[in-house]
Image (tube, one colour):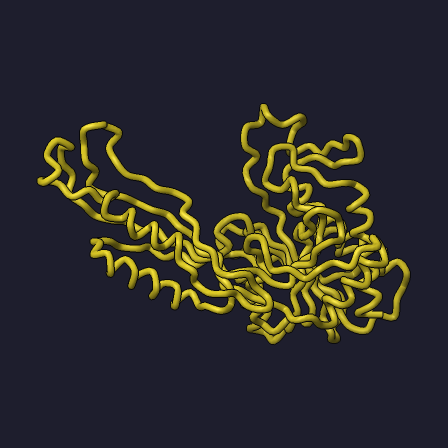
Amino acid sequence: MAARLKKQGFTVEPMRFGAVDNFWARLGKTTPLLVFAGHTDVVPTGPLEKWKSDPFVPAVRDGLLYGRGAADMKGGLAAMTVAVERYLAAKPTMKGSIGFLITSDEEGPSVDGTVKVVEKLESRGEKIDWCLLGEPSCLERFGDTLRNGRRGSLTGILKVEGIQGHVAYPERADNPIHRVLPALTELTAARWDSGNEFFPPTSFQISNFQSGTGAGNVIPGEATVRFNFRYSSALSKDELKQKVHALLDKHGLKYSIDWRPMGDPFVTKPGDLSRALQDAVEKATGLKPKLDTGGGTSDGRFIAPTGAQVIEFGPRNASIHKIDECVAVKELEQLVDIYVDVLKRLLG
């Protein structure tokens, strides 16, 4: 990507933080600044023997491009690169600048990627006006959904202490599983908020429960529960933490929680970028995409707080993170057309 952008006249600035490679590229010095953003890293393949072809050797079968990351989100990266090339080839009178913010730390811990690049840009007064992420946003049909925000994500690792003992002598032990189950039942049944005009209600899910020695005659001495909130902007993460601690304290548990915030909720209200995308998508596909804030987290959470309008639009996401991940070649071709149209609408 960097080599192709340099050929188009972009100034490409590698930004390495820790063990993470990122780059920032810009063409033009004036405002407004339209930035394409995305990530090159992918999730693990899973069992290689279950793939119909090598997940890291692209293969086209029946109009579908197969490979790990084809949909999430190397297809989007390719489309935005080609779109800019085609836009510039038409020699437009560009009113503004184009940027690329590319990271290799989105599927991982996300601590030395986009967040650090944004901090660097902010420190030198470089402001993003519009940011378009090529994340796979569409659900049933290509063109049906734009992401104009994401819910917050807060993980907690709860450790409940008990006293290990023999199952035949329960009076000499304290079973942490028995202790925590009523509290977990209450947590799963709780209604945290009602959501708002942009977000559905906050959800709570238990993802892991570990306890016991493996022996059938031993009461465990500790239970570990991993849970996650996907929360709306109607609540803050601190309010969620307070509610959880109050409930656990009510049940008299001896416990600790390792809180791991993964990102705050963000939303971009309808504006220039969303309107340009909706019109471009409708022109290319015949569908007027809805604005949606569902799904997981994305690096948009680091860019939106700067005041930028942030929208995600890319291919369908039905196969992402799965065996035989794939994307329709036709969708990628249409995606290029849509990105070119957005460039014309926003920058002339």
